[in-house]
Length: 146
Image 1 (cartoon, one colour):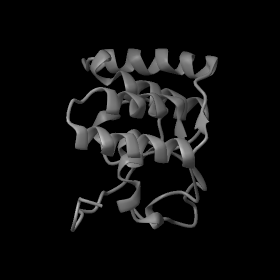
Image 2 (tube, helix red, strand yellow; image 1 turned 45 degrees about the vertical axis):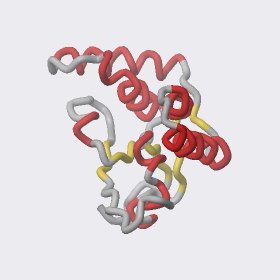
Image 3 (cartoon, helix red, strand yellow; image 1 turned 135 degrees about the horizontal axis):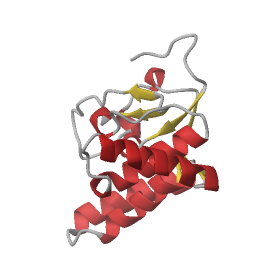
Image 4 (cartoon, helix red, strand yellow; image 1 turned 135 degrees about the vertical axis):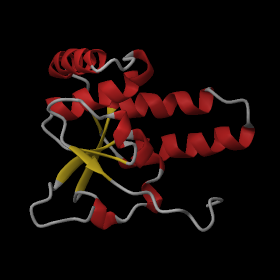
């Protein structure tokens, strides 16, 4: 996907897009990128969920970058109402809501704020009514040590 004249100027990044942000082509993103409080929560869990010191340091780096670079969209009462609709749609599609809880909460936040959601994991969000889903491609890194 490339940035088009009619493309949104503001959009929400999914957690995976935040993790891979340095590798993404800026032309595939809106002018202003936002994250949700849910993404911040998901990133906060990352360093705590591994015993591997190198992995913990990398996850901590992603969290600190997100905290420094973004103001998180809050999870409001309207987000909660949208989450109910998202969870019901996932259940109707026979998808486990609990397995997709972060994704469902992120989608609900994007819907409530009337913003498109950018992700390379589009399958995580398929079948969610009212979600303006934007696919992005994460290029293969020549060197993943950076």
